Amino acid sequence: MRDRSQFPRFSDEEMVARHKSVSALMDQANLDALLVYGAGRFASEIYWLTDWPGGREAYVLLQRDKDPVLLMQLYNHVPMARVLSVVRDVRWAGPNTGNGIAGLVKERGLSSRRVGLVGSIPHTQHQKIRERIPQTELVEMGGKFRMLRTIKSPAEIARIRLASRLTDDSMQALAEGIKPGMREDELPALIEPAYLKAGGYAGIHFMTSMPMREPHFPVPAQFQSNRRLQNGDCLITEISGTYWGYSGQIHRTYSLGEGPTPEWKKLHDAAVEAFETLASVIKDGTSIREAEEAAEIIHQRGYTIYDDLIHGANQYPPIIQTRSTARHEEGEIVFRENMVIVIQPNVITKDEKMGLQFGETLVVRKNGCESLNAFPREWIVCKND
Image (cartoon, rainbow, N blue to C red; front, side):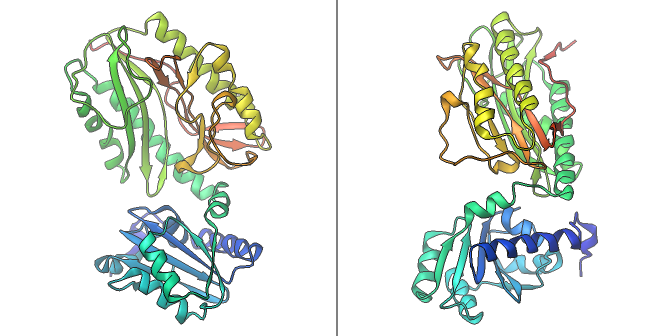
């Protein structure tokens, strides 16, 4: 049998604490069980509950006074799940996952009970569950579960710190490797070895190159073109390195052959000012309304934003914009100690032809924010000497 100690692991104490916090959530909502769905490699909620990174799709059923069950697809993923999962009852869901879940709910005596749901359960599976166990009361718990996870444990912060270091390494590799004549879609090949050599993997690498004197795009692009880089270009970025389910994120701007033009320097200075203002304002007890208000400095400088201003690590709450650009539906959220956030002002011109992003990953502490990145907070000039 494979040795589970040869893989990155969270401690038994860490996993027990997570399950206790979920039990408390179930008690608060008067639930008899919680059914959690996740899909894909490093499916976040499944991984958090089991220490198994996940497969195509899986469910965890947690229930008072009974051991949890991990029900999963695909069949050939079961052996590895049995090695890594702290949930010892690991089962294949069968050829029809919805039927498998309904059968498990019946087996556990939950047919007429109150069961919370977490995750984006596919419609066909949800429909099958409703058809087969119509007396079960299904209660949406996704939002409350996500809020539960916004406060990170020391072990989680250590994991994000490592991912952030890998992200820094990838940014340095980009600074050293960019050359005129390279295609934009070659740049990920500079970035990803930093993760892969350390046992991690790429999260995102959003990048846009353009001539500084002919700007035409306001955000780092999710897809890279075959455009060839040339001196006088800038490259705006949003980069995440990931290590076993936890991501760091950083945003910097590069230029080839020369420093920023006056227009780009002014834009960059505004983004840095907004970042540093927010990093100084946010601490344990700061409200998102206070953060939004502080970010109005962007608009006072004559710019606006496109992307989110702040989001939690791995896209957890809070996810907010400035007061002038707010488009979220959440109620009032307060920043709490050991939340991990990304402050990432994407400052753009109002005609949306010119923009860049500046930011990084931070831990909220009692009296301020601690950065998990060490890469220089500056515009990076690649001289290509």
